[in-house]
Length: 93
Image (cartoon, rainbow, N blue to C red):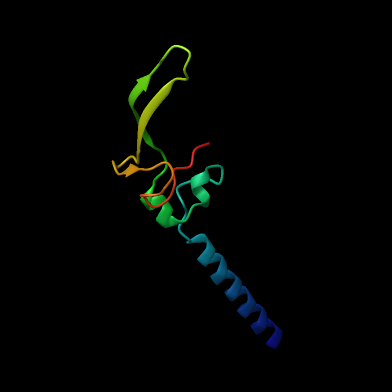
């Protein structure tokens, strides 16, 4: 009888743990996306995606092409590529 009570306790604890894992909030990103591995504060500050605008471009004979771009997050907050004046650098691949 004591063995049966021990087995019920073990089963109850296992069921409780399984329920806790099943009800854990799921992240909206898959493990195949880099944002899956970022902490929530980073994702909130810089959600996936960037808005890049070319503000000027110049082509000179015998010189490399130059362009000036602005980088912003989708909600409109401007970002800096190196992260000196904004929290965090913009990572590009």
